[in-house]
Length: 561
Image (cartoon, rainbow, N blue to C red; front, side, top):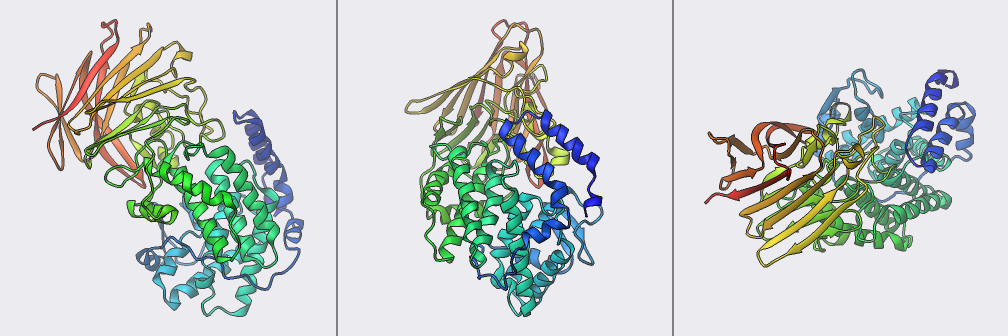
């Protein structure tokens, strides 16, 4: 295996890491992991990992998250589909031609075992056993993709949470084969973690180490190492109000789910759970509820989990019985939710996530989404799982309902996935009257480029019939600026004949009228991304009138009777 590792490729990666803008500790961890690669690929490494041969594993905690019998049946027919990417496999293979990197990660993670389990018959359990055995036979030695710490952690969790299903009518040698592989993979994680991982990715990888350690007889060192990594990560990553440092609903969902999995694993192992688990779950559940829109979907502020409203509610039920409170703001990380019985507005009013935690960060400072009742009107473009195609376009400022100056992002989006230049100061003042909720905000993301400061004021009627705003660009720069309002795909938009207003017609409910002063109106194309889908939609663009010295746009969305 050693001779197959491309030394030039490793050298290039090392140079890239050293030039990166992540904090030094993360870069050094990644550098250390890369430097270990020749050793990990050597024939010596498996001998180091397999210091003893466990004969079996304890039946671990079963998964709390049900699979789909329909998807499971398609798997039995050789149809492996992950996030709308379908590949037909006649015979098991771990790197089929044409498969995306994301698809291969999902295949190697074994997340799909829960779908085979949902089928529930003997054929499904035998197919699962054969596939696990085949993976072990083809992946006995370390390889960068299949043994990546995050992929390995996910695989260990899905194996250990499916042991009762995998063990049905299994031959004795299968139990030993699986036990040995789990032991080797867990020891590998113990050797390499944290490997430069941070945030939700580190928690997920370490969860695999914990669940494997709990399943293996006499291996408390493994789960203790994993739980220590998670405890230290949460101290850094979760604010006192329960919001995750990565500032996106996806990380909020994933980390909360991982913590619930860990609590379940300790209960099934009949061990006292670490006290920090329940404390973190209690804090994080209201913060996840913050992101839930009136129709049950997750709002598009930065990266969004590709899950159904039912999956979100199931998670919250396991967290706190499903009836806990909903956070209305995060003053620490910069989110605001203006909500009444008839309307709801979500605003991103914080400094973007710090370096090392900004893989999913969008350049959408001061953007917002708005619903009247369950009718979504104003949205951001969202996020898609296929990063090769949508990774950068979905993150640009123009993909958000906010002001764009000189066709420039309010935060610089780096090719290395993180952010470079970004707002240093973001302000948000919330107030309310009997019938109105208000938000006064600003950010200085353009100031470093000499392009000034963006001020935004939002006023939402609690009746759900009116949303008013003012966007002021404080700058003397002679460059173009446009205000964008992306519309939900179920809202049709048309410019009036005189060009002074836009008429909005949702598929359900009354129509709306948009008006703006201080700029010219245009209705143009947009895109709406939700997990693994994309839909065409429209956006309202207000071109700032450079002749107006105030550089102020006053606008309103009003429900028509």
